[in-house]
Length: 424
Image (cartoon, rainbow, N blue to C red; front, side):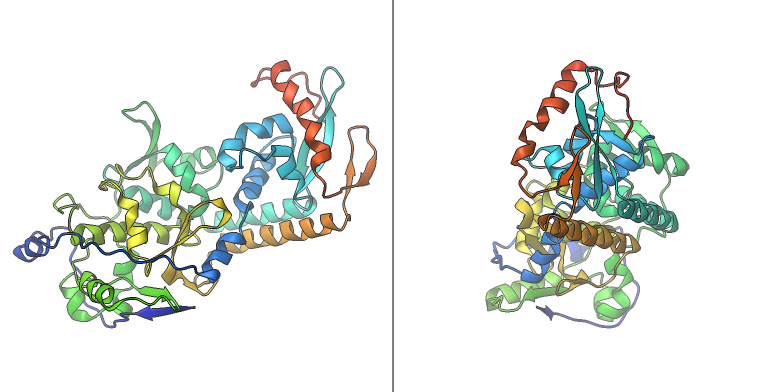
C-alpha cells in the first residue's frame, strides 16, 4: 500500500525556458541539503518486477526466430544475441530456451559431419501471440514514434548512441530490430549519424514543440495549485510505502523542496548550479519524464547510467533515486536494480496499461503455464536421433550439448552457414 502526500488541485499556465530572474538566483543559493531517506521494501512493486523474470529475453528470442526465413534457428546463431538478451553468465542459451517449452519448439539439424545440432522454432501459441503483437505495434506506431522523439528531445543534442537506445528499447516498446524495421520508415524524423567516438547514433531531425510538454505539466490542471503553476513551482506526486515513518525534519525539507521552481526536462538547464536543490529538482524531473516514456513506468538502473552526458547531468546523478523514495522505488529483485515510478501504480497494478503490455502479459502467462506443465512431465522432446521422450526438469543431462554448438563455432565461419542443411 502507498500513502499519498501533498495532493494539490487547480491549473493555470506554466513558464518554461528562461527562469533566470532574481527569484531563481535567490533560490539557487539553497545548496543541496544533506538528507538521506531510508529504503523500505515494497512487496507490491517487487512483485511487478519478479513477475517479469526472463520475459524480455523470451520476447527478444521470439522476435529473432520470427525474423529468420526458416522460422527455426540453430543454437549457435542464437548465441550471437546472448549479450542483448542479458542472460546470466552461468546459464547456457539452450538451457534457458528449454525452460519454456510452451514458447519454443526444439528440433535438430545435422552439420556436414552428420552431428545433430539443436535448433529452435516457435510453438503455435507463440506464433499467434507474435502475430498479435505485430498488429498492436502497427496500431501503436504513432505512439511509439512520439516516445522515441521525446527521448531524443530530452538530450542536449537530440542524439543518442544506438547502444543507449538498445538498452531502453524494451521499456519503450521499440521493436527488437528497430534499426531496420522502424527507423527507416520514419526517415523524415530520424537519421543515423557518426558520433565523435566513432559510434553510430540516432539523431532527431526536427523539434516538435507539441511534444515538448512533460507529463507533470500536462497533469498540472488536476494536480497543482494555480499559484504554484503560475510561479513555475510544480510539485511531484509523492507517496510512501505504508509504515515508512518519515521524520518531521525530512517532511519539512520535502515540503520546501516541492515548492522550488520546476524546470521542464525539455528546456535548457545550463544556467542551473548543479550543487543546488533547484538543479536536483530538474534531475528528478528528467527521470520522472523518462519513466513516463516507458510502457510500464520502470527501467533497470543500469539502463540510465550512461545518460549523464546526453542529459547534461552532474556526477552521481542517479543518487536522486535514493534521495526521493516517495517518487521512485528501487526494486532489488531479479539480481538487478529496477527504478519504478510510484505514481504509476496502485499496489501492483499499472494504472494506465499500454496495449503492448497486455501482449507481454499473455507471453508471461503462456511461459508460466509451459513451465508448470513441463514440471509435470507433460511435454515430449525429440532427441538428436529422432526419438521422443518426456522432457524432464533435470537440465544436467544437457550439459554436453555444448559439444555441438560448441564445436560449430570452430568448424564454421560466423558469417557462413552453408554446411548446415537447415530443415527444422
